[in-house]
Each structure stands twice: as structure tokens, then as C-alpha cells.
Image 1 (spheres, rainbow, N blue to C red):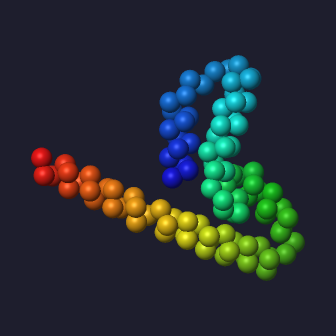
Image 2 (spheres, rainbow, N blue to C red):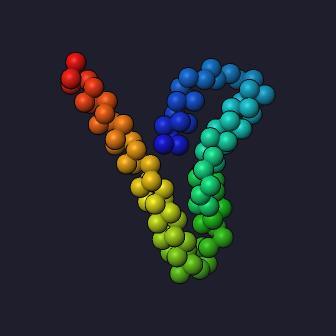
Image 3 (tube, rainbow, N blue to C red):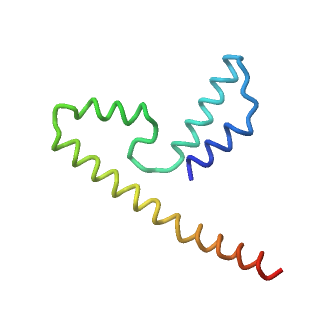
Length: 97
């Protein structure tokens, strides 16, 4: 869902070469990406920082990956039923016309 929001922002925002507007766009994208309360990394930079912290401890790295994967699946699982229901309702509306 976050990826869709970021894509929407990028495609619908007039990207200007002005540095102040680029900074405001970066801040807005960061706000959208971090709007949920999950502890897992959300950006490539965050993933890379976390990987550097655990590069000398493969066991700890595997443990963190497992924990974050479980959190991601749990988060996706909480969003999926609502999305599936709305999609099915939309299909029903369109086929009953």
C-alpha cells in the first residue's frame, strides 16, 4: 500500500529542479512511508544501515529478518481482507450493471 501511495505521489507531483521543492517532496514521501507504526525498515537506506549493524553477526541478522518478515506478513494480513472485500464489491457492482 505504501508503494502505491509513493507511486501516486511521484506520478502526480510536478517534480521541479528547485532544491526546496525537492526537499519538501522528500519530506512528504518520508512521511507517507513512515506513517504506520511498524518497527521494521521501510527504505533502502534503513535496510542497509540495519544490515551494516548485523554484518558480523549472521545469527542475529537471520533473527531480525525473520522477525521483520513476520511483522510484514502480519501487517499485510490485516490490510488484505478489507482490500479483497472492496475489490469483490466493486466487481459485483460492475457485473450487475
